[in-house]
Length: 145
Image (spheres, rainbow, N blue to C red):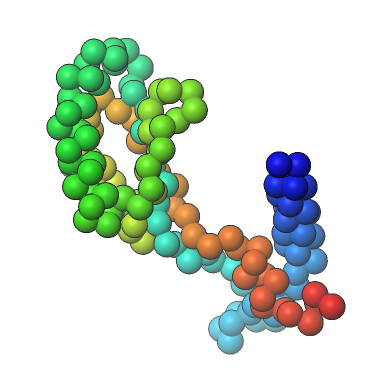
């Protein structure tokens, strides 16, 4: 099991180094002047949604709506809209990975669920995509040598 932490550290250091060494001037587009390097934009492949009970909401209020919430959430999973779902480690909510390409689409899905309709949950939306430093490594392969 000690291999995994070492692998994580090695990957982190590699990606940090790749980010700091990357020559962003190679990423310029034709419309950008040579003095203005273009920043890489990540491709959005999903949205991470963190749901937390609003301040003052009791467990009883949440549990009263939970059967309907679970049914609708399972339907979203079976329909391919929710790719992954997790309980928060602190027990205060859940995390969903939603298969959409922008935050607005994720909001439309999440706001249609029973807990949101009742105003019981706060939602935090984060667009996600492939790890950006990997794109930097691939943009200039000769620097790896």
